[in-house]
Image 1 (cartoon, rainbow, N blue to C red):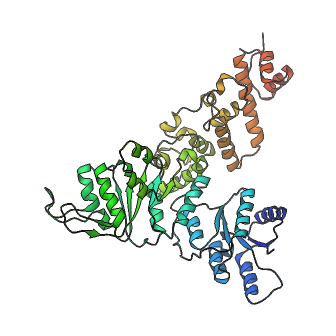
Image 2: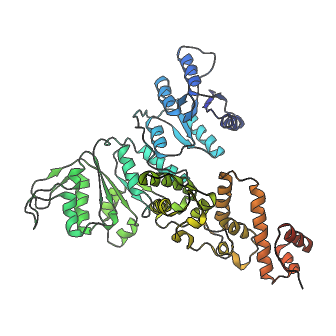
Image 3: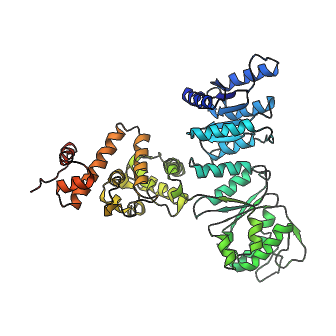
Length: 501
């Protein structure tokens, strides 16, 4: 069998993949930079049969001496049918879209789950033919950020839709970034050179919405002094983004359905059909299926819009992205205000990650703008966070601790005490513990195990003694440890506990 070629300047990545693939009886050959790969492929194309060609190429995206995307293009010039998997630690939208547009078989964000990576490589091995995609993607600043699996799914979908003008329905809560996705779909599409026109159907009065969408003729109604082109005409050759489509008046839904069906419409007061070529992307925070059942939304229009559906996750569903987004928005706010960017302490990031963000990414962006203006020091600490974050109730046991870390560790006993009520869901002690551990590890904090274990044991012993009114023997029995152990722990941890009388 031909080997899997791995190109990455990180020897640890090469080693891990080599060992994992060897266990699957998949041969490998490794390279440290794109130049070595191209030299080997050139030798193969010139008839050098001393080494076998690749079955699959797995390449990092950023390496000294060359880009994985540039390598992807050159490899396709030499071997168009070779499946190429692009790896990257920079999990942004542009990387995903560029990889797919240049013909990647798949996009693998780092750090990756090793069994899933091996499974992906196996699928690539089995791939015999696939469509060649060669459209270049312009190099610009990242439009969207996210390393959470749910966001990577969105990036992949945008990449796969980049050669299509199919109608897309974007669902998600307010503030989750639906218009950003719509703009990305437009930018990475065949109609990218055309206009992108957005309209919020919930923000325009019903009496004006028809004219806004379809335009009007002079004299069509009082105040119509001149002919006016509507949004459909303005978006001709491009994309029309209909935000909050679930709030569109029922009678206008019929007109919209006709336009989507044949591309023709009439201006208000007009008698001549207007032809337009527009890609429609719609978005809503509402459950359209439920709206259809209630009779508030046309079922045929729903099916016309629901060709491809993209669901955007709420920010609370991807808390691992909060640190990255926070630092990004702090940099962005500083540029807008012309000031030096502020840094944020790990503890403050961990506290932010525990906030529910009802306003999603938009709310986090506003919080970062507030911090840039209001935080007194260059390093943002927990007490600098805005009131809506600090005043939000944490899980019950979290409130007994001076920090998220103590809250997390104090809930880990599983002893069945009342303090655990309601702490078993996604917003409970496990998430708190994970957030604090991530903050300490990311900040290079030493002795993370000892730090969190001491906090865990301290809170656990204090809680048990509080439940037993200071009786150490009973507390030890409830915890499942000996009296000598609890006494020793109280001394080691420096807990200020009165002796039993």
